[in-house]
Image: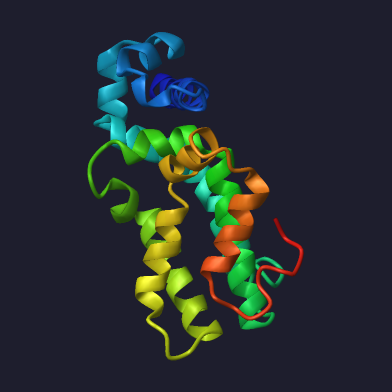
Length: 189
C-alpha cells in the first residue's frame, strides 16, 4: 500500500515540478521533498530521471495515442490522407506546446533521448505512415523525422522566445512543412 501511495505521490510531485518553466533544473531531491519521500524512494521506484520523466508523460501520451488509434477521423482512423496527416501534426504540436517544459526535461537527457523513447518512435512511425499515404513517392521517413524535429520543445521555445514567433505562426509553418497542396490554407499567418 505504501509503495503504491509513494509512487503516486512522486508522480504528482514530479508532474507539478516538471510542468514549471525551469524543469530541466529540477533535481530528484526536490521531487522527493515535494512528494514527502526520501530521494532513495524515488530512485527505487523509477531508477533514474529519464524513466521518471517518461512515467509522468505516459498517461498524457496514452490519451493522444488512443485518439490516434481509435478516435474519430481525421485524427483517428478514416478520413482523407491529407486531413489525417494535418490533424496528426496539429495534435502533436498541441501536445508539445502543452507539455514543453516536461518534454524539454526529457530532451536534455542525452543526444537521442527525444527520438529513441517508445512514444517518439510511435509518433515518427505514424507520421511516416501518414506522409506516405498523403504524398506517395516522397521520402516519408526523412520527412517524418524533419517534421518531428520541428516539434521539439527546445525548437518551439527558441522560435517563441528568440524569434518572437506566435503559436499560430509555428502551427502554420508546420503545415507548410508537410508540402500538401492547399496547406496551410490561404490567409494563414
